[in-house]
Every structure is written in C-alpha cells, then in structure tokens.
Image: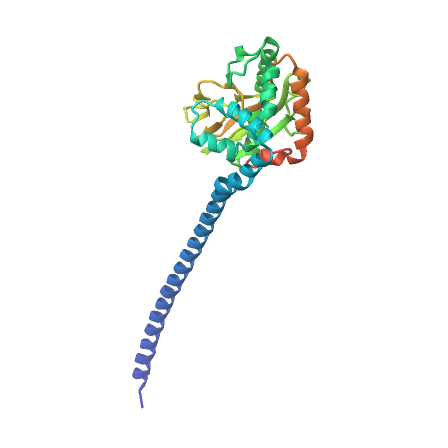
Length: 320
C-alpha cells in the first residue's frame, strides 16, 4: 500500500495539475472572449457600413431618380421655376464646386432649395439693399447698427459666460434662448438688458461649443433675416473660427461676424477651451420691414412644435 509520503507526492502533483488546468482554462476563456469581442466589433462596423451604404444609395440614387425626375416630368413648369431659383440661389456661394451643388440639391441644403422661390422674392423685396453675403457692421443702416451695438453692450453687461459655464460643461454643443423668432422665451439666463422691445432683432441666443467641437457644412433655410454672431469670451489662438465661402473669420481677431446664413457655412472650435457666442437673427435691411417680420412670425407659427429639428445636434437648455 502506498505510504504517507506517496500520498503527499500525489496530492502535490494534483495541485500543480489543477493550477495548470486553471491557467489553461483562463487562457482559453480569454481567447474566446477576444474572438467574441472581435466578432461583435466586426458586426457593429458592418452595420455602420451598411447604414452608410443605404443612406448613400437613398440620397444619391433613389431620391434623384425616383422623386426628382418624376416630379419634373409631372410638373414641368414648377420644375423650371425651381431650376432657375435653385441655380440663382446656389450660385451665390463662392468657391462653387460639385460638392456644394450636391449638398445643396440632394443633401442638407435641400430645404433651402425648396424655399428658394420665396428666398429669391425676399431678395427682390430687399432692394435697393443688395445681399452682400458677408457684412460689416457699417454696411447696415444706422437704426440696425444701433440695435446691434445695444445688443452687444447688453450681452457684455449680463456676463452670460459665467451664467452658462456650469450648465454647458457636460455637453458638446449647447444653446440657450432669450428670444426666438420674434417671441421672448422663458430662460434661466438673467439678462434684463437683452429682454426689451427690439424693432429688428428677432432671435437672441447663446451657442456654446465645447473644446474640440465643430459643425459640418450646412445651409440655413430662410433669407428673411441676417445671422449675427458675437463671440463673448476671448479666444487665444486662431483655432476657433467660422468659414462662409471664401471668407474665414477668426474669433480671436474679430468678435463680430454678420452673414446670410443660407450660404454654405461651417463653424470650428479646435481649441482646448469652450467658445461662447451670441447667436442672433435680425430682419434684413429692406424698404418693407413689415413683410420680413411677418415671414419670421409665420415661420415661428409653423415650426414652433418642431424646434428640435433645427437644433437636433444641440442641447437646448431652458432651465437649470
């Protein structure tokens, strides 16, 4: 019979074997987990690729061939109107190329094309004030210029950056409104100097880009107003800027920027600090301000339930 020493040797071998099996099982398990993780990652990547292919096919092939072409065939006069207005509208963009045309007619500029007959009419109603695309403050009539200056001073006095700093910290892009399309909004922002009766200014908000945040190229929809941006905090390099056609405005050098936002534009904040910008719409200089104001009010009435579509990529803060 085996003695005590033999049993001890057997137990030691079994323990060593058990540890070895445990290690092998752990390695096997790790390999299986790695295989599963890789498979899942490949599956997710595959799904994303499929979604992109579907979007590309719908936007570049299905929509033009099965929507635009039949519509042009069925309604040739309407199609001619849209061809003329669309060509005029998109032709106002500098650096016009195939990418801009594609983006305008079958990309995110399609709603701008849909509204191009109305926008063309608004251009006519604005004469003799020719649409400059990008404006300097001195390009505006004196009454408009005075309101812009009062607005900027009121924003400085209200210390909006300090009021928004904590609320905007956790989001990549934040928006807070005091006024939207001609109507005052409930807001946690304390800014009495901005909550007054404005004659030309229709929208007052503050947009915040967190560090290393930018937008894609996009078009605004309606040309009843001009977009006025005023950077509220000091930027310390040229990595925060906006591009409209062949014009680039660096917020470090020039805090005020006025432009027609139905032109293709893109905003960048590639700095390591947030960018706080006053976000304002003002009706265009025109002999018929009542008409422009009415268009803005109708737009508010038609879209107030769909505000989230305008700002789907933003966190709109109404209360803290």
